[in-house]
Image (cartoon, rainbow, N blue to C red):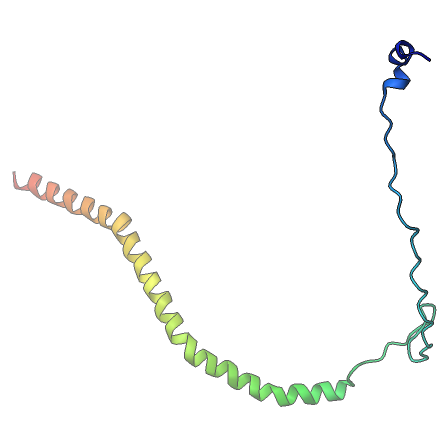
Length: 125
């Protein structure tokens, strides 16, 4: 093949690249050691009975013992928190009432007073 033939042949002018990179063969990880069978753990195909963690009598006794403590804590919290909450709520309520009185009641009263003055002025003539 001459040099002219090599140039004319497109297969000869294309560069060839390797499509893979050589690497060492992968070593499989060692197989895990067999685990000892635990008879206490149920197999997925076994039916497991529902067992209550606490008998209902123990739960009732626990609730009875906690009832007094819970009531005391709620009462103490209300004594601390309620006065400030009521004061804040009453301030907000007073602010809203004052704003509504200015915006709606004051114009109505002003209109009523002007109508009364006009009526009195008409009667004096």
